[in-house]
Length: 444
Ligand SMILES: C[S@@+](CC[C@H](N)C(=O)[O-])C[C@H]1O[C@@H](n2cnc3c(N)ncnc32)[C@H](O)[C@@H]1O
Figure 1: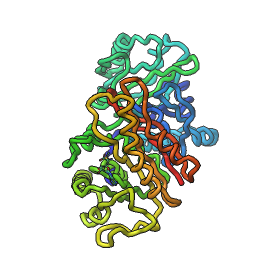
Figure 2 (figure 1 turned 180 degrees about the vertical axis):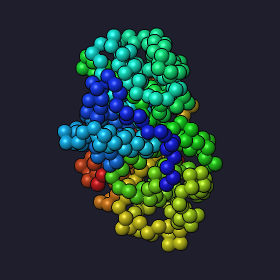
Figure 3 (figure 1 turned 135 degrees about the horizontal axis):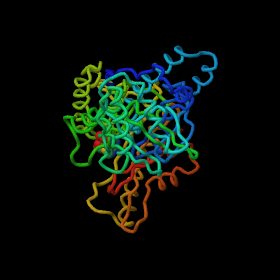
Figure 4 (figure 1 turned 90 degrees about the horizontal axis):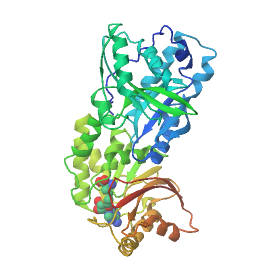
């Protein structure tokens, strides 16, 4: 897989005069992960990815519904032994690893390194100035995002900092949020505020104090929208799974070979291929199978992935998930993969029912859910075996009466007392959509 992370200058670690207090706390306090629209799912995703890729970090707690605190574990212990340069060197490497991990995550919009804290916002400007005086560059973009309910006079603080920096020959352009006091991902991304020496300071309340964290990475919006809107074979009718949700689902995996038995236009498989995972896909509809193949070839060319046309042909095939049983093995020796002995992770969004143009009544949503029950029930029975594990989208519908009708309730009733374990990991709903996607882990 080609690494698409931006080429960044390393963060400046030169010790700053007069900021020992902040320096001493670096590495103790760890990092903040800021989540997007599905914070519950994003939190599980970040925890699992951290466990897999960031052994030096451990999830500690949620500070707000959308901000999680990850503490540096190993660093704290080691710090007692290693001093000075060695520790700074290690931190530098770890910051680079972290900003690469940003590219892996679908639900984390940005990551920030905690650089200190203040008891009162009166001390904020001085603390920020101390941190800024570490920079030796002559031009920077500067911004502040305030997540606390405490009043931060963002604009006047930025003006003061700008004037103080001028006396040090540093010219600064400040960036103000269009709405409220928190910059959007787009504002951070387009102003390159995550790239040294530019700065976004995040002010986050904690235990009566205010943490100060400096953004080290942000979601690469261009790359996400390229895969969201740039694919050659989109599905205009039924819409597609958002790529960030597909990515979050993939990051919840327990196994490294991904199978999507309802591949549609291939959203899950594209994200799997992007992550460099092994993948297989099928759909009952030949047209969809061809769309997935076309989209995969496009992805391969865009990102210079090492997947051949033959592999794509072999791995994507027509199959009915209601009757196709993994344990039966090769479906068609010419076109399919022998998957009998592999250990799989199924990541899939099965049929969501008819596209809705208005909020359904309870009775309509009940009918849609009942019509889908058999498909979900039989697919789970066929595909979740001792060697497979599943992450499924299961739809739920908002209704005119204000109730939510959940297909998962019906599946749970029907699977009652069976050998399957269904565990809800979170949900995803676009604002104003009539459908909620519940994300379930299913094991046998
Ligand atoms: C909601 S779409 C999947 C969308 C896909 N995740 C994407 O983003 O491109 C559901 C897909 O399930 C397929 N499907 C419906 N019934 C099926 C069955 N019995 N076996 C396999 N695929 C089926 C449909 O053809 C459709 O492509």
